[in-house]
Image (cartoon, rainbow, N blue to C red):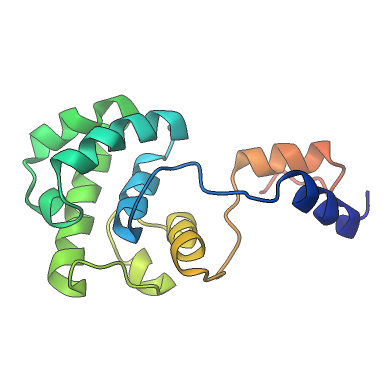
Length: 154
């Protein structure tokens, strides 16, 4: 199928695509995206519903007790690493960026737990900045099913 036809069909059948993660601020989306590594969006939304009520983002998470934060996010998997990164990330947001996500790829990538993919999710969703394309294994699987170029490297 030609790519232009595919894009037309996708726009027709999916006109109002939105992020599957629940958030109200760029800072919340950043934390939700960090939590989403190796976890379903559904599970992240369950965890963040309570997490964002318990802790103000990023100030509350910067001050959070690490062991308590670990328990709060345990069901997302890799919780020790995620808790350490979230706390450190939020500390840097508070100290270095006036508690705000800066819409800059390199600045975001300097935060703990934030790589290119996470930074691009936040930039694209919250700021309309297209620094790159967020790609995961599902994109590879679907693009192969649609007959697009097949590759082992998404």
